[in-house]
Image (cartoon, rainbow, N blue to C red; front, side, top):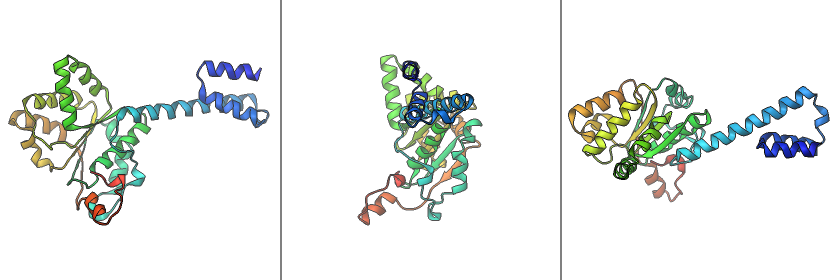
Length: 253
């Protein structure tokens, strides 16, 4: 009968329940449970399995630049990283409030890693997240307009609870990209959250976006009430290269 039960669990794709029940049968521990306890144990095992699978799928779908975690961050005082602030962001309350996070600092200081670490935390908590290098995203959207898939791509972005735009402002926006950025920001304003990383300080974003009226509208929506992390210091990649060390993933751009 147990063999048949296991086969039914397998066919129903109750993989967590299947493994837990099989393991307990092999160790002869099932007799230690009451009927209620056995059911609770199997349901918990299946729930854990599905939650872990969901997290893995969300992380894979997000396409983060780094496999990052808040625990591996370097909270050095000379980098101006406030550990308490980062951990609060890791709680993802800002996503619940539909707020934005702006991370600025010179190249190699750790912006991408910090944004990826917060993004991983969001995936762990069940949020839908996607990461993009900003120039590559807008090149992709230009191609989408040409082949007719633009609306589909915009809808995919709109569905994300957290959109991470990395390397924002490393090249000026042309008229088409500026209009697309405005559309993305307008769709998300007050509804979903963003993390934006940039080598440029926020005060210089106006110049990069261009077109005063549109730039004003975009920055008002991005910057207003945003959480800010302004990292300082020398490039950690350059420092490691000088010291002859292999660069650690948690100190990249």
